[in-house]
Image (tube, rainbow, N blue to C red; front, side, top):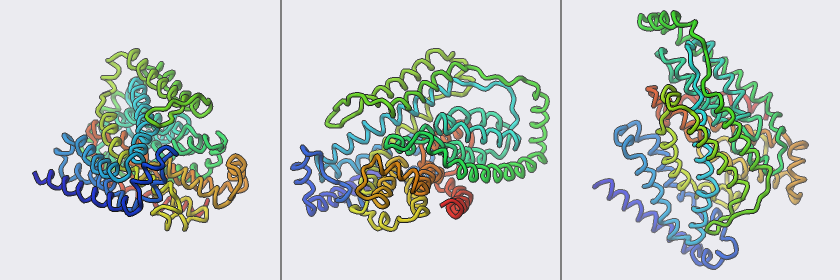
Length: 492
């Protein structure tokens, strides 16, 4: 009853605020008048308080699992729907057609392709099984993280994460301290490793679509290598200390003895044909950035033909993997649908409530975040501004905002094709800062990058008690932020 009263009250307040703001700005009239001409600039009209539902969504993800885990486990889809409606109803009431257009756009162009890609990678990787005994020593764990970091730029951070997270968990099954392993896995494999090619992370793929050469991002190799080596060294030392401490306990010694007795068991990979399907997914993503097919109009939203083809091919790869992979392999791999279902529900709410934040950000100096945009002028500013917003917002539109901001600031009036070439050469440090900030700092929170949440979900399903939303940020604040500061001082 109290929850219902709270929901109704909050909805009434936001409806009133949105309608008042919309009326004062003439929003509803403008929406109706200009709907046929491509809509209005919502970002320039939306107030900063319009991100309240998004903040509520984030706080729910952060606090409910901590203070009401039972309620959250059974009702998180309802919580996601609650915050979605709290935003959607007053948003549409105040801005009419323009609001409907943005909601439809973010689901057709962003959310559905996002979930299809995650589902495809999740399904295919679930058909790859590493058999045998790998003891989770500090050396083995560090090698796992190194391999994942290297793979991330070529099969994507999501692909590398889904391929390796289960073998890492199984290798450390007998370890007492496991949380730090998963946290560093998120840092390196799910984020930092994906900065060298457009296949690595969505913001770099957006840059590729806007004219950045496919291999240009390899120029981030020195920056990424410095950061990755630093993190790997810290991880190894941290893991070594905990490992030695575990060896002193009787239970861990017994586990070590058992593992030693089985150390000659052969390591093998089952379901290798799934690599074909994985390559098919990666090829589909790359194809969508090269081909230029006719668009399809869905409810007033132009959906590019190559993107539709990409999504169909990814679904095909996933279904083929599901069909050809024996059920026994997936069962042995402890494969279930829960992680992808949880991500689908929660990100449905995140994508809905994030609309005002993204619109304000895209409005640049004309939006409520103008005070932030205007202060960004040097490479180090671009690195931290892009990174800070990418920690909580979708890093792809954040990247594009500061990418366009850099073009406007450094090369005003120059056609985009020419300006991008100059940005890659004459002003390359700016583009490096934007790219690194968007990719690296997605590691700061669970929602900074899609695979973060999936890795956490798979780890928890395997019995590892992961930190809360804010608990995870303690790791990122005390480990990543000092390293990012060092990176910015050296490279930007």
